[in-house]
Length: 153
Image (cartoon, rainbow, N blue to C red; front, top):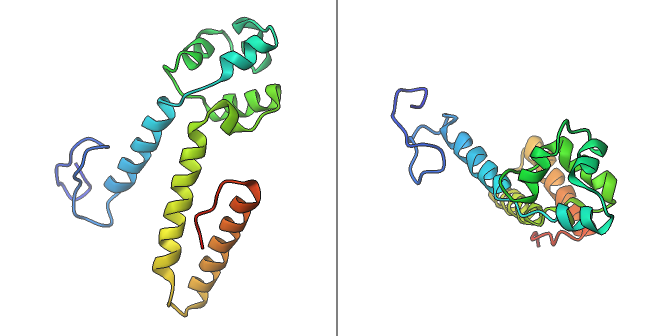
């Protein structure tokens, strides 16, 4: 139910309330992103095996109490926590996209939405909008430098 009392389907469903100020749409977007992270393919196991580490050893190195969560991660049953993703990057010296390829897709989705907003803001002469447009251009340049394939033209 939205804050105005409208009954809305569970997040991720096709329809939501029509109140533009509701958090319903935001929650749906968050839920969708979380579902993507839960389905996140991961290449932690090949990296772990390449260096001859057991799950117990890797779990210890990255600060986990047991190997159980690492096992779930390797079997694609859960997505990584932020702390886990950063720790794995440190251990294996890779970019997040190498360990979790779906991150590249998430980055492209973010850039596409940023580009949509950039296009919608064109023509507004206010100082605030100019600041936002400059920020979006910075985002696109940074993505291009990193090789994320910025879609902004």
